[in-house]
Length: 73
Image (cartoon, rainbow, N blue to C red; front, side, top):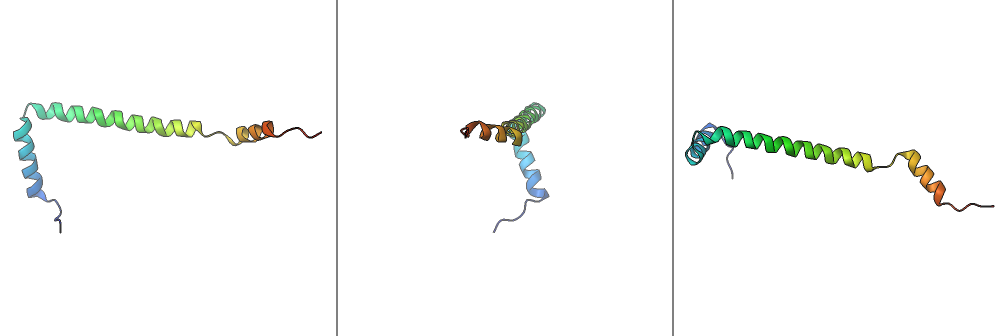
């Protein structure tokens, strides 16, 4: 159905991008894309760290369960 992308297609795509943006804008576009990707990666990493921090430690769960149980006496 769909062919894999080969060298002729990549060259055609690069040619179209060069025509659309011009030679002077391409380094700026690549730099901006790199910054955006770096920011995205750091935010995803921070979200993963936050998820790990939010999960309570087993000792905290045991003490929380002990606090909820009424004293039997």
